[in-house]
Amino acid sequence: MFAVIKTGGRQYRVVPDDVLEIGKIAGDVGTIVQLSEVLVVGGDTPVLGTPTIKGASVAAEVLQHKRGPKVIAFKKRRRKNSRRKRGYRDELTVLRVTEILTDDAKPSVGPRPKKEKVAKDATAEK
Image (cartoon, rainbow, N blue to C red; front, side, top):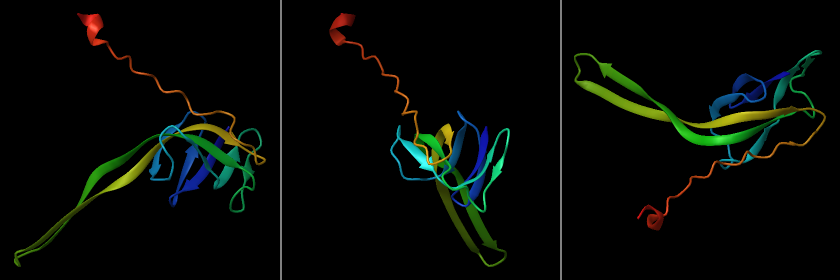
């Protein structure tokens, strides 16, 4: 089963356990967010929305917030000694799709537990 979702003015084709980078959305790391703008739900019998499917959503876990690569806008006017250098970096959110929901269903899968780092005791080493 797959779905086509729309977020941040872009469309993405997603399947469960898919990891994707989208424009920054609200949500803490480790929480489950629901993306409700579902355009197509595919499978044995695909369902097309007009423009979206009522009651369908995609549940995804927020893995991290980060910044994209630097994009440099450099403008130069020749023979005028005029130059402008400007750069920016997009704010991104990395998501893992947990499940595709239909009929106003709630997400059944909670956030995955984080692996705990084992701290070494200073007294155990001596």
